[in-house]
Amino acid sequence: MKILLASQAIAGHFNPMTGIAMRLKDSGHDVAFYTESVFAGKLAELGIGHFPFVRAIEHTADNLNELYPQRAKLKGPMAARFDGERIFASNVTNFFEDIRELHAGYVFDVLVMDASMYIQHLVSTLIRKPVVSFVAIGNMEIDPWVPPLFFGFLPARTPPQKLLQAGARLVSQQVVTKPARDSYVKQLEHFSLHTATGGPFTDEPYRWSDAVIQTGTASLDYPRSKVNPKVHYVGALLPYRRATAEAGIKQLGSYARTVVVTQGTVDNKDPNKLIIPAIEALKDRDMLVVVATGGAGTDDLRELYSGPNVVVEDFVDFETVFPSTDVFVTNGGFGGVLLSLSHGVPVVSAGINEGKNDVNARVEHAGVGINLRTESPSADAVAKAVDTILAGPGWRERAQAIRREFETADGCAAAAAIIERIATDAPAPS
Image (cartoon, rainbow, N blue to C red; front, side):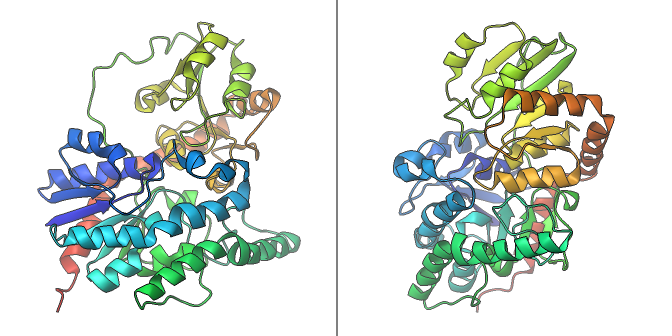
């Protein structure tokens, strides 16, 4: 069958989908990808057909603050409000028109899409093809037991907490996500379509998809009052990678402990937020500190920290490093957290924007790491958190329990099976 995958031009959304794409391709399906040209080289290497954006605005980690200079000043819920409207909702019509046009020449049987593109309703109704959504972050479907999005809350336990979160939920729906929803509703109306009155914009993928592939495990989600049968937790969906003969980092195993540090690939331009405090906290110990900068300021950091136990790279092959790692210090990218836990490595997390405060709250709730609840921790705070994890075996034991959950299932195989089932069961257009 013909399977079209579609993704935002965001590495954390695109990369996990490559593993699914290759599993489907290896099973004999005709697989193509709709995404921006920034990933054209990667798709060519994988032998997967590529349809680039035509109308859609390209939003990447490198150009967001250039396109929208005011974005850099926003934090937490207000940053989420801006991103929801400008980065996600603004492209809905563009994404749909691109895909409707390419469908005329590449008549796909099923669309497997990055959930944050928000064209599930349009595709299923107007193109009348089954849609499977891939969620690259934690489960965003609203539920009365689950804290409101973008505030980094843990589940409410006391009456004051419940009251606070009820107010925050109202703010989330009436302030944070409202501009995105208003834009989305107007675009649907252009196609003579409507959606549930008052429903949150972020629930649309869960409502209009035939199935939802949710990366992670239910144990990393919060308890829910109801279970959506469309949602399938498939474990750690990781980017496709071929076996290589890379030597890796030669210092691995030369020190008593190894700590990996990253500030991600989006909010990584100012290393003073997390990278420098982490290095300052750990550089004078019998400890290897491996830093992945995401390509920002690497040479400057190497010059500043030239000690033999500090390794600074643009990018690090985490798959080769995590087996020797004791603690992962991160700003809370969900993909990195899942990869860390897939190796049983506990986490110290420090991040707020792009929904990272919600990821970090889940880390705290699951007991697999320490949430510093800031994007700019002090060196002392990082040192204390790392020491706490190293001194308490329970952190690693809980992370290892998550690792065992991941090992019980092949996430790419599970995702491919879901896609094949949805495509096979879909009724033929009349």
